[in-house]
Amino acid sequence: MRSWLFQEEHDLFRRTVRHFLEQEIAPAIDLCETRGSVPREIFRKVGQQGYLGIPFPESVGGLGGDILSQAVWIEELCRLGSGGIAAALTAQTVIALTPIWRWGSEMQKQQYLNPGIRGDKIFALAVTEPDAGSDVAAIRTTAYKKPGGYLLKGSKLFITNGTQADVVVVAAKTSPDKGRKGISLFLVDSRWAGFRVGRRLEKLGWRASDTAELFFDGIMIPQDHLLGECNRGFYYLIDEGFVYERIAMALSAVSLAERALSDASRYAQEREQFGRHLAEFQVIRHKLVDMALDLVKARRLTYRALYLFAKDDDAKIAAAMAKAYAGEMARRVTDDALQIFGGNGYMMDYPLQRYWRDARILSIGGGATEVMYDIVAKSVLQEGRKTDGGRDGS
Ligand SMILES: Cc1cc2nc3c(=O)[nH]c(=O)nc-3n(C[C@H](O)[C@H](O)[C@H](O)COP(=O)(O)OP(=O)(O)OC[C@H]3O[C@@H](n4cnc5c(N)ncnc54)[C@H](O)[C@@H]3O)c2cc1C
Image 1 (tube, helix red, strand yellow):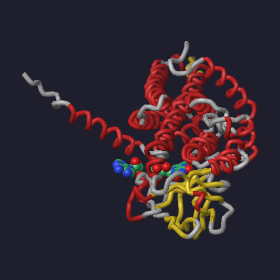
Image 2 (cartoon, helix red, strand yellow):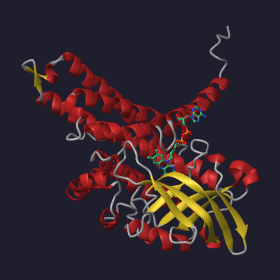
Image 3 (cartoon, rainbow, N blue to C red):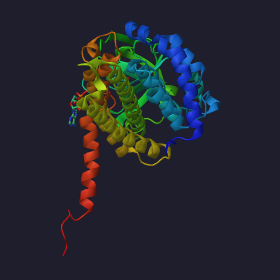
Image 4 (cartoon, rainbow, N blue to C red):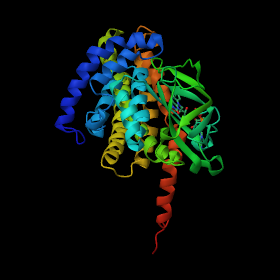
């Protein structure tokens, strides 16, 4: 059946991407999971196909595709079943290269976007700090104006691709007294004096991606490495960057859950107990139906947000709804799938345990469920204020 959202060109692209991922990336999953990071060769391999620059114009080395094509890429990548590989590659494209494309100068695009799209350089976005997670405006890293540039001091936490990044897009306070109105974004080369990678953090899931602490011990950033306008960083992140990141996280949740459901459905039809296949027990059949219903709801919310975003409508509320619902749905569905696998689901020999572990971050990272609910609640309450509260005027 034709999708209401994707066109024939997207279906063709999906087939090409799926073939590439199954041939080139799937065989590397175990290596990446054990190593705790995605090797540079994989970034390059993906970059050579153009998949790190799908929505960027050809003039900067991109494929010149649309947001829906990039969504296809994210869905297929997550369908592989390694959230860590997906996290590393989407951290590069969705959260680090996108702001360079959106707000970068010509020099920044030529110098950074190009090698990022080719996969020759690895990128990260560094916003989170030990005392500033959900509350982005509370960051303490500072970048004070100096002759010829800015002096960067501070630290970051939980940074995906942090141990191997060549370039980091860093959020820092340029006017600390102005709160959220005093945040700017900078392009920071990890070879510069004062850049230090701290601990590589051990995680429950997303184990194929590296996550690190970063320290900036007085880095002198040249003036032309300020990204966009000074003091506009918070709005770049919150109004646009995070909306897109949330939709990408919701797409990841839907794809991962779909993979878990399909594995569980197959297993239920193969595994026999009490002389019958598991799928013949009504309780199992109904569990599979509950999982499918949950998945359909999450997908609808996600595609709605994606549709609005793709046609440049305000997608902030729709993205928060999709992220909140899909993130929680992935927890439920992977948990139920693991239950259907019984003891095998708990074993490292089967990938179910990885789906279950990888699903857990989807309701925390990129805006936790509670914070998404707060965003949606503001809109629901505002709508309520526009009505008479449901009173019958007669
Ligand atoms: C594996 C991993 C990779 C990551 N990658 C990156 C990255 O590449 N770059 C980057 O900058 N960051 C990254 N992050 C950080 C991630 O975005 C944050 O973890 C997330 O925003 C939540 O922040 P926090 O962990 O500090 O939790 P906190 O903000 O301390 O929240 C803790 C709990 O309190 C709840 N809470 C907080 N505020 C409210 C509120 N107002 N109302 C109700 N409940 C609230 C939260 O929902 C959560 O349940 C990563 C994190 C992880 C775990």
